[in-house]
Image (cartoon, rainbow, N blue to C red; front, side, top):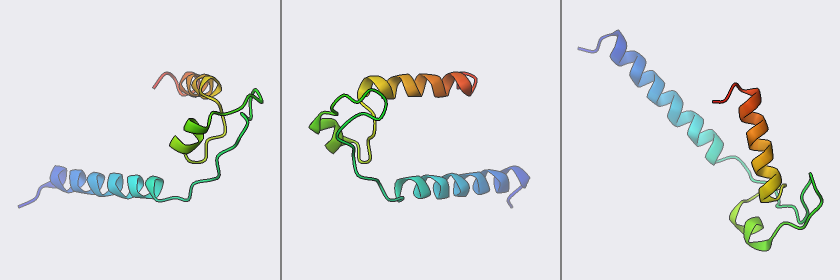
Length: 74
C-alpha cells in the first residue's frame, strides 16, 4: 500500500522525466559564426558540438558565472 511520501516521490519522478523530455526534445537553433558578445569567430568544432551556440567559450563561461551569481550561487 502506497503512502503519501511514495505518491509524492512518484509524482516528482514523473515531473522530472517530463521536464527533461521537454528540454531535450525542443528544436535547436542554427549555430552562429561569430560570438554575439565579443564578435570573435566561433570555431567550427564548437559550432558542430553545440547546436544553436551563440557565444564563444570565454563569453559563455562569463554568462554562466553571471547567471550563477544572480541566482545566489546555485
